[in-house]
Length: 138
Image 1 (cartoon, rainbow, N blue to C red):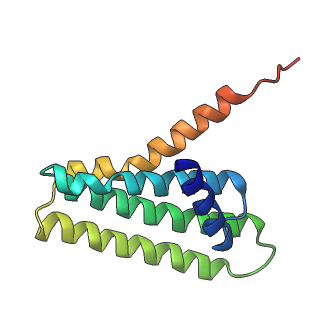
Image 2 (cartoon, helix red, strand yellow; image 1 turned 180 degrees about the vertical axis):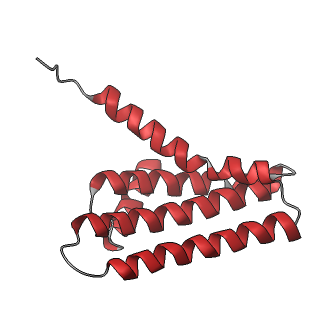
Image 3 (tube, rainbow, N blue to C red; image 1 turned 90 degrees about the horizontal axis):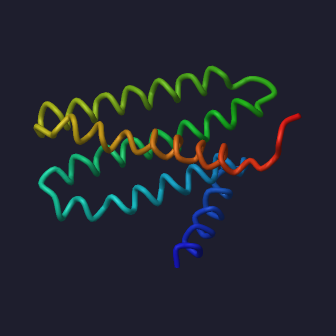
């Protein structure tokens, strides 16, 4: 079941513009982490705060991964549009975090733990890539 879900997610992400396989793998992993964090909302007192951090981190990661992928392969123009998009997302994320922490009195630590799932995803993917290399250097 998980393999079928991964393939479906990869297909959807490819159609959405994630054409680099490594970026798509990271994106699929992050979406699966997001899906796995949903039960935390119902079973833990700070589950909603954790889920909000995971959701915000996932959305920012997906958007940034798509933008970085476009910038790397961009031959001309549109840099200003990409920068405005980046700073726009940064502003929206900051406003959401402010609203969660100040008005909802959410746990900043749990939001940060949720946000850090993106870093753990990247770190674990990098370790797998490093350990997966079987070639010897001369």
